Length: 140
Image 1 (tube, rainbow, N blue to C red):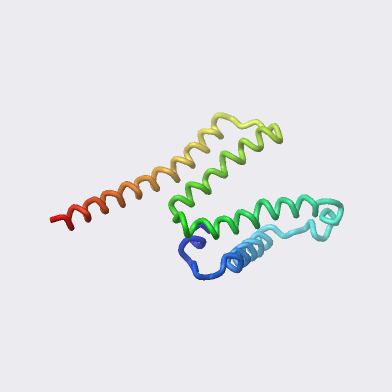
Image 2: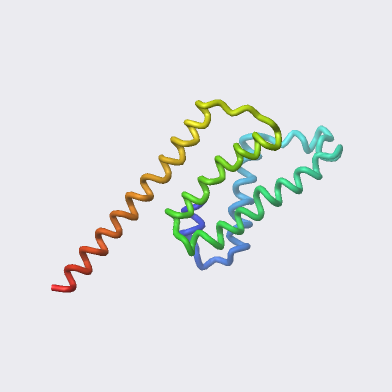
């Protein structure tokens, strides 16, 4: 998704690209996990209120913000910014739902963040070295 936001069809209007990505993701999820709640009455019994709120704040706003921001900051920084969602969600689950998170789970979160952060920093360091060498070569 981040790659598609930053490098694929950057000339396509933001809302059109966001609509296409969320629609295709919805179709894929519905194929993998059939939406039985549409038939059993759960949605009409009150689930729709939560579905609208979660859909808006969990799908619509993030997709539009990523579609706007990723072409500007690049996919590397976008990946790091997207990874911030993981500890934020865990902290929210601890404070709002009082979920217990073990030390092993925190270590897993740290490993994921390091796995995203370290390669991006290595790429930045490599680009800086290449830029420095190209500047030194043009000075001679």
